[in-house]
Image 1 (cartoon, helix red, strand yellow):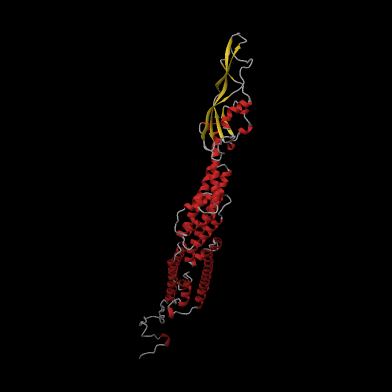
Image 2 (tube, helix red, strand yellow; image 1 turned 180 degrees about the vertical axis):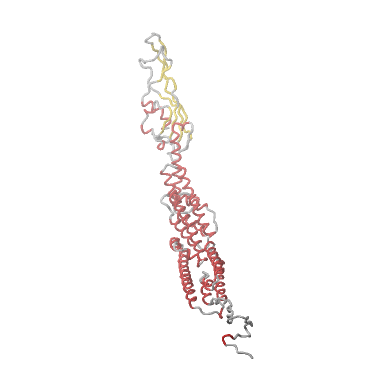
Amino acid sequence: MDQQTPPENQTDRLGDPEVAVLPGATGWLPHPAAFAPEQEPEPRPRDAVAAAVGNASLLSIGYLLLGRRLPAFLTLVVTVALVTAVVAVPSVWLEVAVAAWWAAMTWHGWRLGGGRAGAVVRRHRRIALAVAVPVLLVFGLVRFDAARLEGTLTEARDRGDCAQAETALAKVWFGHRVVNAPMALRTDRTAEACRRLREASGRLRDSLAVGDTKALSDGFRGLGVVLATLPGHDRMVDAELDRFLRGLPTTDACRTNTLTDWLKARKPTGNGLDRAATVLPRVAPAALLGCGDARMAANDFRVAGQRYQQLLDEHPGHELTGKAREGVTKARLAAELAHVRGLGGGYCSQPAAYSGAPEFRGGAVNRAVVWGNREYVDKLPADWLTGDVGQAVLVVCTGQTEFGTPTQTCPYRSSRSGQVSNVTFRKIAIPVTAYELRTGKVVVQTRVEIGGASCPSSFFVFGDGLPPNRYVSPSDGDIRAGYAAVITP
């Protein structure tokens, strides 16, 4: 007869194996322990909005909120590389690449977050907004400031004002280069243009200060480089060129003449610098005349004449040509006179003309400068002679005194030997060549003979014996009469 098992000893025959009770067992065996299966961790909640907003900061925050650390690290590295490239090499294409990267990261965050099926995790959204909003706000403000600065730079370029541009350029910083690479590129070009213009302007100022054509050439070359390689800065170049042109004429006429000569010789380049030649009609004639006058005052008559003649050749019909013609004549006469004065006694071997001298005239006193033998010249009337060749009509070259025509022969007894000898008294003969200073040509070539008293009662001699010939003793009138044939023919 079956005996009913107590409830506590009943087993689930469907789930538990049957157990046999061994003989001699004092009680029921314990129910074997049931092992619970290992539970999987609860999946991390995913919020697509938080992931997208977090990644929109470009700091890979969305990936971190999704627990994707490796993508977060890799995308952050790419972001840093792109930003570095944008700053190092400003380019529109790199800026487009950064924008595309930003859009891709934002979309990828949304997709990994489950898109529309994603959960709402408010804490994640707060974190994403706390990071993305400041980043995007700063980005917007910096880009707005970049646009404002670029507007200032555009105005400065249009006005040709490098000072205003450099004030704005001093405010450009790293952030502007990150958020607006093309603007940074344009500011760099303006900075380069202003640097080159500053150097060119310095060289142009040097040329105005000392008349250095090398500095002038360097300055124009610098302006030309800006026009050729940095388009958009033409007004700034014009402003520097205008500043240089306003410096003409300088305080020194010859310095101005040096600069205008360079401008005249400069070959046209087909750009805005060619208008520098328009200053020549206004400045060059006065500079040439003033330089001629200055060189005249410095006794540089050759250069003075060149400047006056240049004015006549290059600016015919100008109101200053009358003075220039007078200057040419004055410079030529001054050069001739300086040459004659420089010859001194050498004039007799190298006669030269001074066309400013009075004309040689017969029957009049022709004042003379006498070179050579002046033994009797000092006895001539003062109005016959001059020490300044600039006041002379004649240049008289005198040779050595010779015996001239005999006038009387007288016997004399030597007080030493008692011997009686005849002594012939002769006129004083002096070879003379007279040049008309006006033409440098010979007008008189003769031998002046000066008469005088002869056969005095006695005379003193050196040595033994009486000389066979002696000079007459001329009076002032005799000397005057002798030279009259030359000076007052």
